[in-house]
Amino acid sequence: MITINRHILENGLRIVHNEDTTTQMVALNLLYDVGARDEHPEHTGFAHLFEHLMFGGSINIPDYDTPVQNAGGENNAWTNNDITNYYITLPGKNAEIGFWLESDRMMSLDFNEKSLEVQKNVVAEEFKQRNLNQPYGDVSHIIRDMAYKTHPYRWPTIGKEISHITNATMQDVKDFFYRFYAPNNAILAVSGNISFEETIRLTEKWFGDIPKRDIKARELPVEEPQTEERRLTVERDVPVNTLYMAFHICGRKDKSYHTFDLISDILSNGRSSRLIQRLVIEKKIFSSVDAYISGSIDSGLFHITGKPCDGINLETAEKAIWNELNSLKEYPVNEKELEKVKNRYESEQIFSNMNYLSIATNMAFFELIGKAEDMNDEVRKYRSVTPEQIINTAKKCFVRENCNILYYKRKESDTI
Image (cartoon, rainbow, N blue to C red; front, side, top):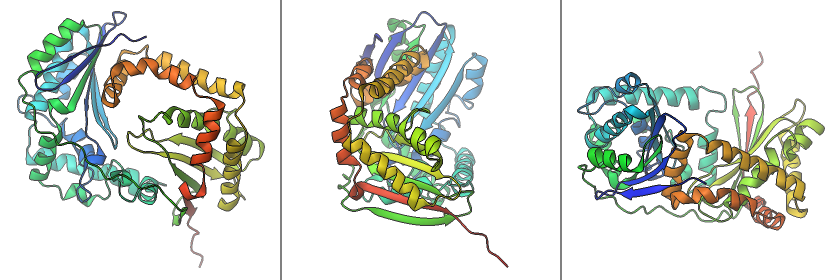
C-alpha cells in the first residue's frame, strides 16, 4: 500500500507525494496534461517538439542538464498522445535543484530562434530515422489513419508529417506553450527521501508565484463506432511480410480496461501464452507474434501483430489468429491460465512500487485519470476479472466489423 499525500497550490498545481526513507534519492515527476491529441490537425507533432524544447534552456538557466549532472542526478522525458511527462532524480540533499529547474522552465522558457531551429531539426531527423527510413516505420501512421476517422488519435505522437514541424513558427510554438504549460494544467509527483512538509515548502517557494493560465476545457471529437471491416495492403522494402490487426477498445478509465489488458497477456505474454505456444511453437505459423493494448485515456486499440514463417502467406496467418480469437470467445479461460496472468501482473506491480521513480510516475498518472490512491487498487481490479467477463468482452471486441487489417508486404525485387 502506497501512502499518498496531496496539496494544491493557489495557482492550481497539484502535488502528490510519497515518502520513502529506504532510499537516499528523490524523484520529481512533472506531468503536463497535453499530448498529441491536443494538437491541431495541420500542426501536429508539437507536444513531442516541446519535449525537446523544454531542455533547450530557460531564461535564468540556459543549460538544463549541467546543474542536474553536477548535483548527481538524471533526467529525461517522454510524450504520448495523452500526456507529456518530465522526470528528474536527485540525491535527497540536492532535491531543491529539481524544484528550481522545473519551475523555471514552466515560468520562463527561453524562446529563441536558434534553439527552435536546433530542436526542429532534431525532431525532423528522428521522424526520418524512425518512421521513414526504418523498416515498418510507417505502420503507426497507417494503422491510426485506418482506425480513427475523427478523433486526433489518428496521428502518432511524432506527428502526421515532417512539414508540420519544419514549418512551425515561433508564434506557433509560443501559442502552444501558453495554452498548455501552466501550473493549473500540471501534476507534480514527488517520491523518495523527502518529507511532505519539505515538499510543500519547496513547491510553494519555487512554483507558488507562477500565474495560472486560462486552460480551455478539452473538447475532442468522439470516434463513432466502426461498422465494417477495413483492409489495406502496402508493399515496402522490408525483410518479411507482416500482419497487423487493430480492434477498437475502451479507454483507460473504463471498467473493461483491465479485462482487455488480461486478454492481451493471455494471448501473448510469455512462452506459454496462447498465440506463442500454439502459433509459434506448435504450428509454426508465425516466427513471432504479439498482442497488446494501447492504454490510451480515450478509446484505444487492441493490437495484434505477427511475422509469418517462411512459406506461410498472410491469409493463412490471419486465419490462424481469427481461430484463436474465436476460441477465446467460445470457451471460458480456465482458472489456472487466468490465475497465471493475474499473478504475473501482481508481481510486476510489487516490483514497480519498490522503485521511488516508478511510484512518482504512477502517482502522477493516476492523479490525472482519477486520484493517485487508485494505484493501490489496481491489483484488486485485475484480480476481480472473471472468465465470464473475458468471454463477453472478447465477443464484443473481436468481430470483423470492429477490425482494421493491414497486410504489410515485402516488395519483390525487380528482375532484369
